Length: 284
View: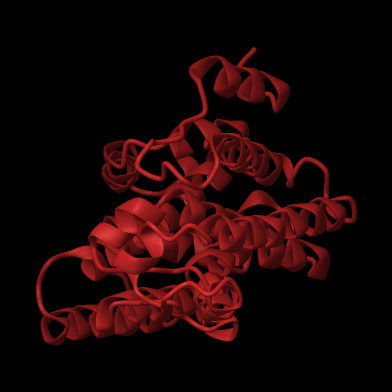
């Protein structure tokens, strides 16, 4: 018997997508039982595929049909139809873990936001919508695969998704500016008298003020996610706590580096990753 009673070849293909991404996600999901781990790999593979569509260098008018195709494929999944390894594994995971169609579609909507325009200094409301689609929606799928479909688990997804995405934004300011993008909110930039353009903002002396303000938002979301976890199934929240700890460590190191030498990459050292992994039962 295989996880989710899925075809071994489909499971191997989905896991290969996860491994090829080269992230710590594969190791993090080791804390899950096989069925839940297979579901998470399929969710990740779906996210990776649609993210790659949004990120490639082709014009938007070529991306939109491909994203729309995935909207149709997600709709077909809820009619029991699947046509590739990722959708075949998802077809088995959806009824098992009550994964919601709206959350899959929200992820695609988030990728479309990146695909159809170059995001520069969004309003706080637009940034929050973006974070909800590209991160919290993934969280809402994930907590169900982890084993908790409660309202408290949805609150974990709401806050942890935002905390992770804001940390990503702060980590990638320099890289994003090289692509003509700036995800720092317009309100924070304007309040610090920073021009609303990537090039001008990157070297502006007041940029640390805006970055520190967004970092405080991230910390508030980490804290709210942690509080919501206390009302959830403890075992189900283990992967969420692991991801939160990893990203909180990144945010802490970003703050210690400061917001002037944004070209200096920030990484959590291997010893700290191992310590976090042991702490949350991934190793040892």
